[in-house]
Each structure stands twice: as C-alpha cells, then as structure tokens.
Length: 88
Image 1 (cartoon, rainbow, N blue to C red):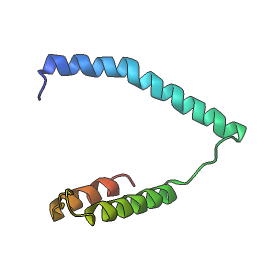
Image 2: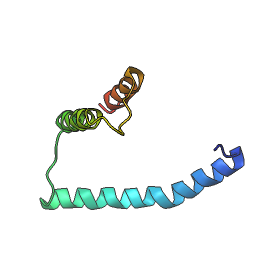
Image 3: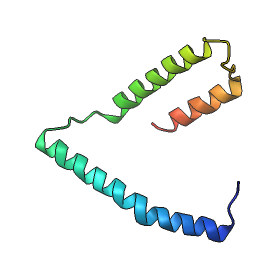
Image 4: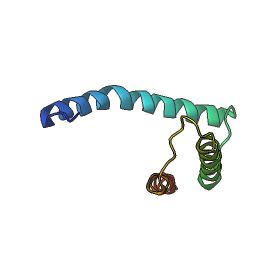
C-alpha cells in the first residue's frame, strides 16, 4: 500500500515527535549505564562479525529443514548479504 505524499509527511512528522525522543532517551540511559560500569562496550567489527555468524547459522538451519520452508533463491541470499555488508 502506498500512502499519498501528505499522509507520508504526517506519518513521518508523528514518528519524529514520538519515536525519536524514545530512542534518544534509550541512548542516554545506555551511555549512563556504560559510564557506571553496568554495561560493557563491544567494538563494531566484532559485533558485526558475531551478527553475521548468527545470521548465517540461522539461515542454514532454516533452509535445510525442507518441508514447508520455501527454498530461497540466490538473488534473495545476495540481497541479504548486501544488507548485512551495509551494516559494517
């Protein structure tokens, strides 16, 4: 479904006023927890490596189940890999 431009603008404005402040508050809470020593930091490359590994393991297990699981095309796999690569 495609929204008219006016409706998209209104939706975007609403999201900016409601969602973004919530994320800002969450970020501030996490920074404070890190400074207190309640949270540890993980460097970006290490966390992305772990995320990619989990994704591949999950993808391998779901694609090998057969039955009701639709086999994914090479195009879908390439798109997923591109999306994960874009995270780095």
